[in-house]
Image (cartoon, rainbow over all chains, first blue to last red; front, side, top):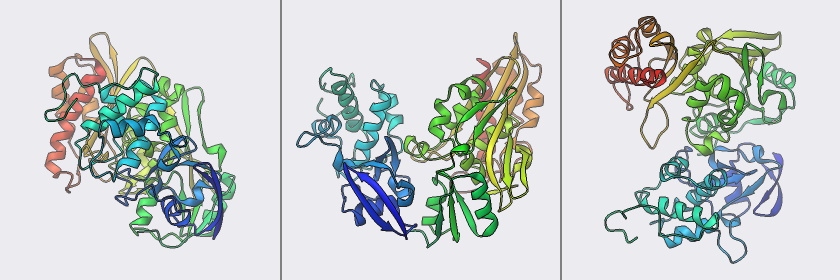
Length: 172
Length: 284
């Protein structure tokens, strides 16, 4: 067993873990932070994405012992009290989800992208979330939500989305 | 699945890491873990011990060493891509690294880890080969330098012995004015290259004076497309001549035949992607 100490969503936890414990399992099973889902088990899908010391990581491909001393933010630590993060708000407003399974990881990846690139093009948004798979939406509304959140975070207010013509069947 | 049990050690120095590897032949080095941890989870490997390099500061960072750029083995992909020295002196490394996996994986995965893993579908080995990189290993007997051409020996097999650690990679600076391009063909939802082509081209006026071409996933190791390099020497920098030279891209290759593509399809891709890569690098 190994002793690990990490701050997760603002709370410091200190625990004994087996070295083979994955960060995602430590968060969910050890600390009860079940907002981070486990999807593919092979680091492909990105649903378990969290922020580790300010960088997005796939928590299924990090050992809990590697996160000793780290600052972790999960989807559950993103809101400011009752106030949702602008990316969370934008995902709701633009319906950037259907089943919702990929959403926590998708939101965390989008937050990371916008921190590095506050004014992404549509193409840059698609590349920025390429490590996160959604099998429902076809990504249209996700991309719209991220572009809208970018605008909101730049202080320009939310906008209805950056597509010049809305995809067929999707209200603008 | 979760990995099988293993012991875990996180030494602070290269010397301590090497000593740990020398003391346990079934120990495995953990760099960024973006290949190793999935391998452990799938129970494809059962190391007795993981020697985690995360605390070894001397392995991180990029430095200018006169005629070469030196990239520390534990430098993360995201740091390699953003590094001004890499952009200036090893732009092909930056271009290929930017296509590795996705942003979250690039935040953890490392330059040395990817090379030591030696997956022929990985993007960086072909670049190391094309740029004549030297891979520096440290073991109980000290340091030695291994040419990229000798480093990659087979599928996931390198010249590193079990008690050796890849510590840094020396990338010779290209003399003169070169332009580079990494052309990659992959499924959108998976960043492994079905085939990739790493190329650097030096033009002299209207001709190609010199070219380097490395191929990803065209065999059990990265491949240097020497026939293309020879065919490009001195030809006019125009589409027809480049297309003709690119016809040699698959010569002597034995690419894998798997779900990603049949071998003859990969040979076709190698010719097409080489043409595109060289044309893009040459500004044609």
